[in-house]
Image (cartoon, rainbow, N blue to C red; front, side, top):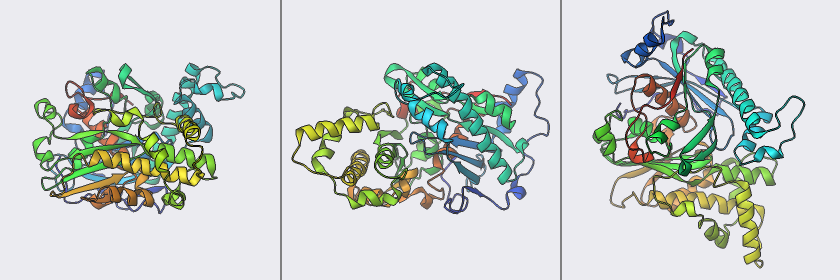
Length: 459
């Protein structure tokens, strides 16, 4: 798949929680046989990993580190013969987590965090039981999201080849060789009637990778261009970058080719915290869940000594490949840092808005420091931002200030709404799995080779 001249997208997602193409029914030609019942598992696998699954419809789902909700998209990939329109985003939906499920997920993200929960009648009392409870509840909720997407876009279940569902990461320990995504894919397959691809990270880790980030392979397939260096910056709960040098799509256009993958010029890794800390601090000190547009941060002043202390976190100094999550950056860590700062700098007065401004600057500075390693002043370079942070106007302004040698804009300029990029990526990864194609980039994750990611739960 090569870089498109333009990518068909839905209407702007600010209009409603569901967006869909009014002409969707006209585009859904019969891409599958009417009967998807296979006599044996061997028959199913033979049908799954070959060309029959190239051009159909896929659903991608994502709930990130910020836990602000679940995004789902319905999209169609054009295949190798349709390079002018390799992607059509046909419908999208976003739903907030049920409050209790979100509370439990947040608790599970912290070691022994469920000890802070107060179980009601019939609820679990141990961490492992809570994990099982949340796996089921997450899958039930995800199934509702999928069914709502299908209903509101008037899409037949039989038209969708697979759902790519990442699940919810509750523990990511690459240094220990594991990553846990909470999800029961069996429930989604049963409730929706659609096969589900999940558990994307652990196969990469089995060959020595960090299991993250996985989106750079999708970024390369869709966004690389021979004319300029592009950096994709995802500002979710955690910030991560993908560096796509000029000609990257020509040098490494096929992630399934191990020789090319191992020599890939594409670079990608986590750079540090983004919305995770910004949202947590906002929720703690205001009646809002997030700092809309960065207005609250903009009302404050950056506390430079505090910023200098925060940037000393050892993660920022590590070399890539690297990945992180709530294990490294969380509200408890921030509060501990503030306590240390107050003890060492009792003469400095600051407000909660000043801390928000400092956290925003921490994200802008830590991401820009890494991006500037790959940007040359005399080259044509651009940074394209996606994720929830793309809607933070103040953060975008600070990014541009730290990146004077390139333009900073959102992926909307490339034809894909920044809110849906990661969900589309997991639809693409599900397609890679069904076609027997690799989905990781070893140069990005540190894996010893390219591998087919994920496990399939057939409907």
